[in-house]
Image (cartoon, rainbow, N blue to C red; front, side, top):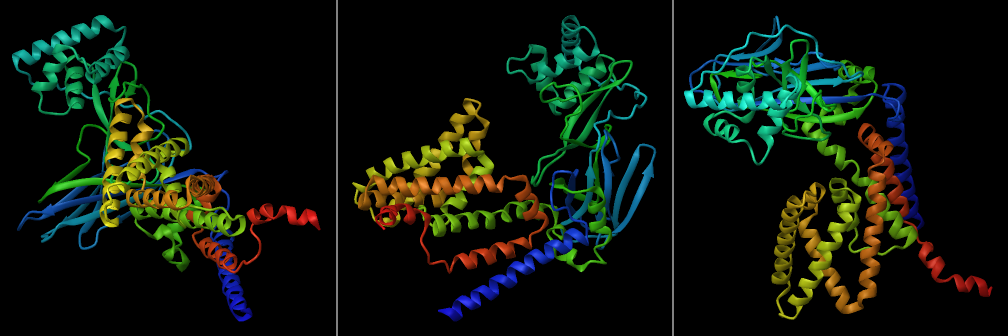
Length: 508
């Protein structure tokens, strides 16, 4: 017994010191911040260009590169061009990245990664309005457009209110007949129809393409804003909700009507983005890339992964924190839970649904599931069939909840699909058996214990300092492992047992 305890103590001590030592080295030698509060939010944006080549044709891929606009500052850029010729082409309105190859046999993917932050919210640079190119219209289209423009002019006071009314009209469910007609006769998107109406009304307009920033998003595509000229200045408006001004979470990629991506000699081209946000000083972010050859440790950090995988690991690295909460609450406190790590899965679901919404959804799904399971128990089904039936019922309830939530405008409840279906069905089955064998009191204790542990884990996992440390110092997971190993050898009283035997202490 003593030999086993000594071995665990030595292993745990080594792991703890290793994790803390690497973290301190990164903090003091490489400049990684230990606390996130006083540092800027730096976005890593990775664009992925995928396409299929055409047989026996030369390939040329042109990607318009972003510039520093609307207060954004570009820290660093990296291009992946293995097997391709690569150049950066400068022209009057910006830069293009150009990949070329004489022939290509199979579908391929090209990457461009940048790091940027926004120290100030500035307006876009002024530029002269381009010449207005009015669309070529059929007679009925021209008449409908004239009537719509006349109606909007009558209801508006200036150019800004005219454009806002136009965007609102095109987003209404009960649209004007002329707006409906134009949307039905144009083959392009509503955004193109709006630009055609504005051009016909002699209002200079073009499109702004960019990315709506959301941490951890993968396979994000470009979004569009409209920018029009009111004879004095350029004004930005969101074509989705008619809000005026640059959205705070919008990264401007390209300003103008030219295509962002052009692929010659290929087909089925697609441009997607992966996003990760970190609280780091700008100089640290630059140094990570520039000094990677000097500090080999950075080659084995999460920053060396593609951005899409970085977003996944940002969540995965929080799981050891939740696991430590489960160990402490079960071994030291003595709290009962439904399954060993069911609280961890519930906490992960809460990260997507938010706490109150997740609690309500969990209680509804489990409550209805227990009622269905009690009815199935009277059918004398075999275990496999019974659990399969519960899984189907749980999925049906999730779909029903999502549909009802959408109809009532409860967007948060739409994230019900993040609950682990199989685990939820198995939890319902276990609680039903526990109810039959031990009664409602035991079900209440284990179910309530699972929710208490899940809530504590959720509060820790959403703490900004914890998020920062787990992502930027993943080696601290070794220290958490050391603590868990030491707790695994604990054989003393739990807090709940001290409360249970409190009367014995009084008798002494």
